[in-house]
Image (tube, rainbow, N blue to C red; front, side, top):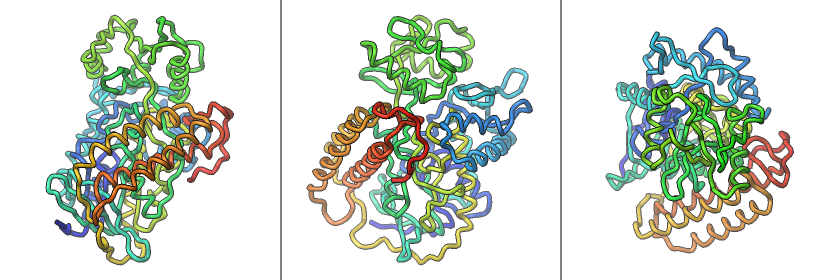
Length: 518
């Protein structure tokens, strides 16, 4: 069954912080907006973000300092203009959110609490609900969105194809709705992708399973360029369990004094510059090297020397999660190991979110603006979502590129063959293990070439199974995940020297003069 939805000024695909804020700002400007999400509105990576929002909001801090910290963490690879936009417009947006009632944490006196995280030279990180800033922000933005009469929300809808006209202009998307079992053809003057990253393709990830890069595949298939795909940031401290969940243990814990210890309880970062609060790429690699050196596959995050009352006040949610896994953090270090966390690479855009494809924009983690360079500074991601979500929405509304009404074409409606589910799950598991082993936190040419060959073979095998006329869901997802994984591996293979989160054990010297697109 096919249903045509009303035409919109702006179609936004993705409901994390970037998509929600873009939708809210566009609707506030009077536009007719349709916001689509593959799950419920309160889902996705932003919702689970523990980190805060880094912004200059005090007199003893300044834009130059925040920009310098961002560039230093990015290993000098950041685009200067993008950084300037981030810190200046981010401060204005943070102050606007404060005035609009965003529930940032405050001291008993009523003043805002500002945390210190790795790579920052000032206490500038605003948190909410302790280490549930993402949840607080998403819930706050959902409340704003729900009040917009000119904003339509479509939940549980998987976007599987962007619509383009004969000139290549993107004028909407095709969706499959799970609960109704039907296809929607949505048209719009401009389309914004805010679908998140691809870190869930790795075996250990702090992101939900939906962060598999589907939005990047949509963009690439419509003619957009993917950039810096080798840059996948691994968070140093994700809870480790041989068979249990992998969840983030906020950098704010280390900002509060938590230390990292080896299998014998000894601090192994104490003598390094920045110690536990060095930039994430440094800390993650140090943990990786320590794990290789010792027998157990994790290190310890030690809180035992910290004030229990202070920890409960700021981190009660996290400590309860840890306790459900049978770990008493008052008596023993918490087992942690790096996990894929944030994708710096994505759809190449300018500072207004334009992808180079007429009518198609991208913002948030799905986009690559160059603002993070080769390593993202802590708590700059939610800030990026807000800053570039707002810029993207406002510029997309003024898109005047020539267009015709796009048509979906014949034989492209989606359907689900449940018999393919088991094969898809197995292929995704094998892909995750391959990426983690050969294209994970530490890489080399031999491993990357092995992964590339294996991906080509697996992709070829997956295409031998017949599919009836149309687009089968599991077949589509399989093609997309192989497409994105291959781009990640190929990008890493063609970047021969190390920089930031891309670490080549065979060529460790930094180099910032390598082509970023692939």
